[in-house]
Image 1 (cartoon, rainbow, N blue to C red):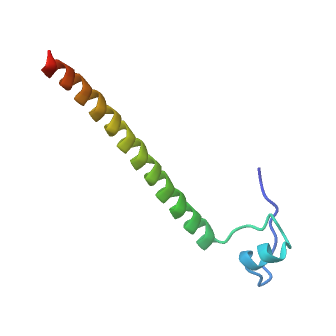
Image 2: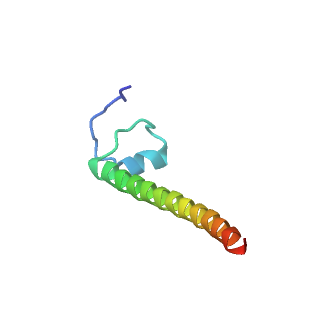
Amino acid sequence: MSFPRREHKGVTAKESRSTGEDRNFVKTKDEVVALTEEAKHAAMAAILVCVSLYLFIVETSLSKKLGSERLS
């Protein structure tokens, strides 16, 4: 899917969005880099949450298993 392109007329993408002038304005390279960095950070945070949850579940199940073996 390709987006319509237009010549840059000195209006930044932010100004264009604030006026509602053009919703399909092509983003600048700096905006794309910033969004990519933000997406990387969000992905790393999600991975850390998943790993932490996995380790918590493993730790809980192991402590239950070891606790029940110690009692018997």
